[in-house]
Image 1 (cartoon, rainbow, N blue to C red):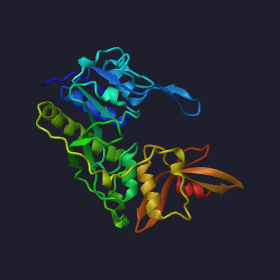
Image 2 (cartoon, rainbow, N blue to C red):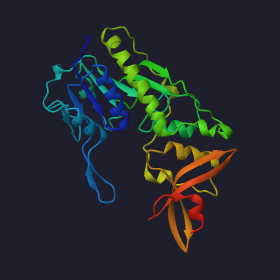
Image 3 (cartoon, one colour):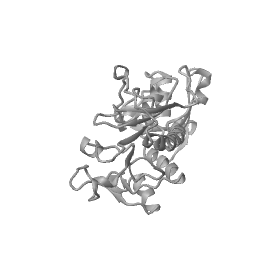
Image 4 (cartoon, one colour):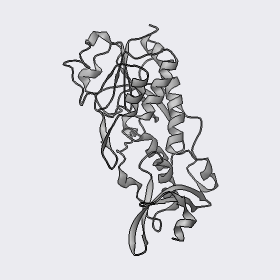
Length: 293
């Protein structure tokens, strides 16, 4: 089967990058399922998820259900219509009744070497962990989170050193690592789909005893204590939370407690060098200038 009839479920920038790779290689989804628009920012403006923006630009059929249900199946399309689902950081629970719809199941692209870093924040959690090696897993989904059988895994060539020190400048931030994992994951998916459909791959159960789990990142995770926290931990947070929420600390200026976002920093020989900050209600500026205010 050269061109399977498939649905793509995804929401984030990572999912956009992988769908873009699929389309460039002739895999056009019959349907894109993404999360509903939601209010964002201080003014709570209704904002489209990245996948919706991409899908509309490419004239793809889109639905944005609050929750997935069999009746009507995925916006009224009949169950027998689908050969395959592809799921990448969709962000919502997919019940077994939905996973059972396509003939060849639902394939998930997960940016970690499962069973490590299951859950919603594998990229950030990997950077925070200090582990050296990561990669991408193509998994046959079941009803549990990142629990399904593995079809294929591939290590990312660029290893991240666990000891920072003078190697800190070589570490990837979350945006850079996501780019590399998306490129790897997209190509791996393109190679895997025809082999899976043709029966050339045998699923392998994960070693669940070695599973580690990640949590949803919240704004408060970006708070650091510049006096008490370990410099390496602060720097790893800076790298991990590059896309969101960033890192910040509180300080006193003119007898007022203000929030300061660190926008650029380095770690050299175990010491943090802050280059740029964005103080509360002010534009980004050099750290030296801020200290003189």
